[in-house]
Image (tube, rainbow, N blue to C red; front, side, top):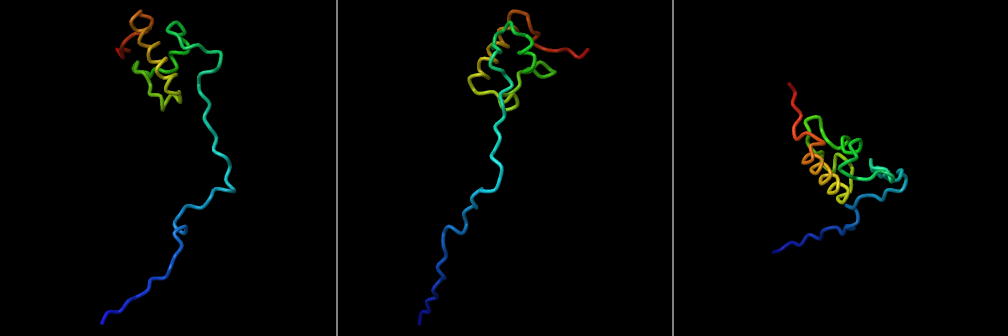
Length: 93
């Protein structure tokens, strides 16, 4: 003899996350590069904001740059290093 136990029917929507109705809208971070700033190897005041204390190029996530801005910034920093406008390493001596 087989006994069949009927499972209660549950709505599959019960496990979904509730809709965010009363929460504040998510604020987007503004880019640290202003509209007038030009990403260029000669713009040392701009480039120095995107280099760590050791002289490393900070990541795009830390900088809050778009991928295109990060690529341009990386090329500008490398070009400034080659032209001796920036040191490759910062010595702590």
